[in-house]
Structures are given as C-alpha cells and as structure tokens.
Image (cartoon, rainbow, N blue to C red; front, side, top):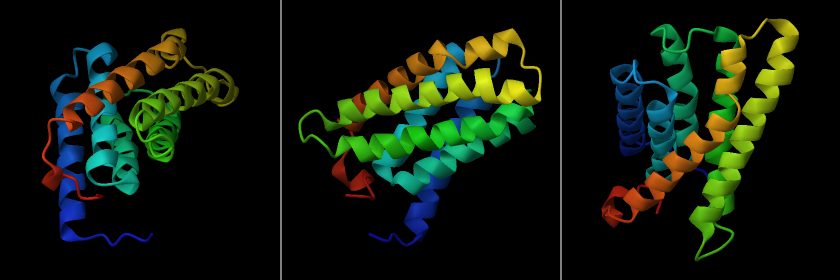
Length: 171
C-alpha cells in the first residue's frame, strides 16, 4: 500500500519530532536512563499514530539533531543510531501484525532485541575498526539500549490504549 505524504501526515510527524527533540534537548543533563526511553516512546508512537515512514523520519533526524546540539558528541556512531532507530520502528510494525492479541507486545520485544543487537554489535565491532570508541560509549550502546527500547515501547503501548481512535492516521 502506497501512502501519500499528506498535510496531516507531515504535520503529525513534525509534531512527534518536536516532542522527541524537547525530550532530548530539555533533558540534556539527565542522561540516557530517562531520555532514551522517552525518545523510543516517541518512535513507537510515530509508528502507531502515523506510520512506519514517520517513525523512520523521527528516528533518523533525532540523532542528527542531538549531534548538532552536542548531546551526542561522537559523530561516527550517529549513522548507526539512525539505522538502529529505523530497525526498531520497522520491526515493531512488521511484528505487531503477527498476533491479534499479543502483537504489539511481540513487536516491542522483537524490535527492542533487534535494535539492541544491531547497536551493540556495530558499535563494538564495526565502528571500532575505523575510530577509537571510548569504553563508556561502548557500554552505553550495549544492554542499556535494550532497556531503553523496551521501556519506551511498553509506555507507548500503554499510552496508546488511552488515545481516541481519531488520533491514529494509519488506521
């Protein structure tokens, strides 16, 4: 199914991107344990409310903007975060339709595992081939990624249940 980029689609995606940036920039000093789940929450909400492409757009722009604001100071990891975020959204939407009752939960677990595995492996084994990655950065892109993806996704599924159907563009 081909989706047209309508004004509501673009507007909702922009609003969700703005919310993610408010979390990233406004909570800059708080760190990954809070900001990570909030950004992942917005990624899943983008996928649920607007669609996969919306989540990918938000997931690709947030690390670039985080780098430009000094929140993510290590640029070589930025493209991998973009891909990890995209995989998170894509796998969530692919897996959520597999089971009518538990689909969203299966989607969050599967997507979180994919994002975690991708980021942990690429930061540890691919990025280090080209640049020296600080050990704290390697640690931040390992198991904490799984936790932040799971928490953000679970919160998104819970919040979704309280939203009116009219908010969902892709249904």
